[in-house]
View 1 (cartoon, rainbow, N blue to C red):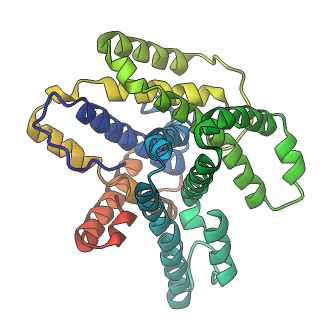
View 2: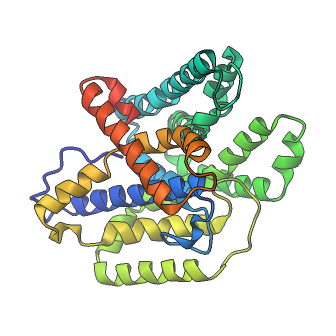
Length: 348
C-alpha cells in the first residue's frame, strides 16, 4: 500500500495516522525479511517476538485488510488496478532474473545455479511463484494474486453471504493444514507443489481474520479510545514477545493462530501512534524511506546470495543494513527512471 494524495499538513486526518503507521510497519517488516534471509540469527534483533517469523503473516494481514473495502463494494476498477500492481513484478522480475543468470553463465561461466536456466524453470516460476532462486520470494505475490481473484469472483457469486462462508472455510483450512492432511495428500508431488498448497492454506485464515476486522471497521473502533488501545496493543506485543500462548504448529512462512494475533497487535500499535504530531519535514522523510518496500522485498533476495559468496558467508546485522540500502537505492533509481510508466510498480 503506497501513500497517495495525502496532505501531510492535515493533522486532524486520522487516515494519515493509520496510513503512515502502516507504511512504517511495512518498512519494519521488510527489514525483518532481509534479516531472516541474510542473517539467520536475526531473532536477537528488531523485536524478536520469541523467534516468531511473523513478518510475512503481518504483510498478508495488512494487504487483505485493505482489500476488504474493494471486495465489499465489488469495485471492478480497483480490482483491476490491484491485479496490475501485483502482476507486473510477479511476471517481470522472473524474466529479469532469468536473463541475468543466463548472461552471467554465458559470459563468466558463473551464476547461482552453475548452469543455464531453462524456459521450463521460468515457466514454473511464473505458474506457482517458485522455481528460480533469486525471486522465490514471489510466492507471496502468487498468494495475493490467487486470493484477490478467488475472493473477488466469489463475492459476486455469494453476494452478501460471502464473509460468513469464507469464515467457515477458513476454519476448515486451518484444520486441514495443521492436522497433517495436506502434507500426506500432496507428498507424492514435488516440494514446490506441496509448499504452494501449504502457503495458500496458511494464508486463508489470515485473510479472513483481516476481512472480519475490516468489516466491523476495527481501526475506527480502537481509535475511539486511542490511549487505552495503544496501551493494550503494547501489552500484547510484550506478551507475545516473551510467551508462547498458543500451541506450536508446523508450517511454512506464517504458521499457527499466534501469527494472526501478532499481526493484529502490530497493525493496531503502529496505526495508533500519534504521527500527526510529528514535524512536516520529518513526515516527508519517513514517507520517502518507507516508499520502496516492494522493490526491496523483491530485489534483496537476488543480491544476498552474491554478498554472502563474495563478502561474508554467514551474514551480519551490518550486512543486512547494507543489503537493504543497496536494494533501496536500486528501487529509488528505477522509480525515477520509470515513474511515468507502469514499470514503476516493480519498485513501489
